[in-house]
Amino acid sequence: MLRGGLMSLGDVDWPSLARAPASQGRLDLIVVRLPDEGRSCPDVVEVSAESGVSGDGWRAEIDPSRESQVTLLNIAVARALAGEGEERFSEFGDNLLVSFDLSETNLPVGMRIRVGSVELEVTAEPHLGCGKFARRFGNEALRLVNQKDLRHLNLRGIHARVTRSGTVRLGDAVLKVQPE
Image 1: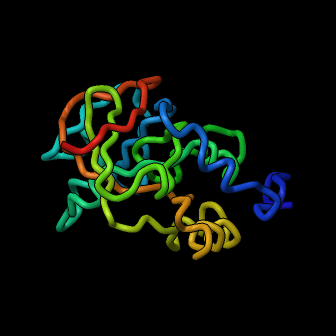
Image 2: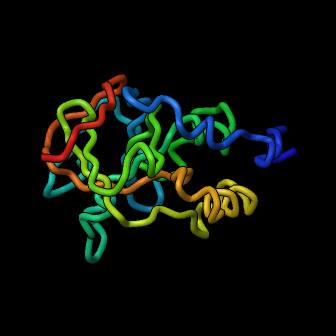
């Protein structure tokens, strides 16, 4: 058992969990990363090609890369790693927690997705667990999300760049869009 009485991460059927739903999903949580590792979880936020998620720490980086402008995480994976308490979900630091299949099979590099009026393009920038992730969710979780034979599932989430600015709201649909 893990902290908080959770089952072992090895007992989870990660492929099934990570791959559902594959065609239309939902935006479940918006996270804006504030200075000093603070978080804000607004119901609505503007997202632009110039600034990423409005107010997010991405823009404050010394040399922000558009390859990691917006991060997405499957909320079912977040729930399995952190437990049912939604208060911990913002600790992942991903901007958009979605009920959607983020695997390489469903969202290869270059695929576009629409969330609200925003369009995002999946980038090749790998999104792997780090030291902060291990401190927050444990070494077992870190090993799992970085495990080579599971990487194609993108358990730690994906990076995307903004290709069309707009607004996202909790509950917005998440849809695949064929690249132009």
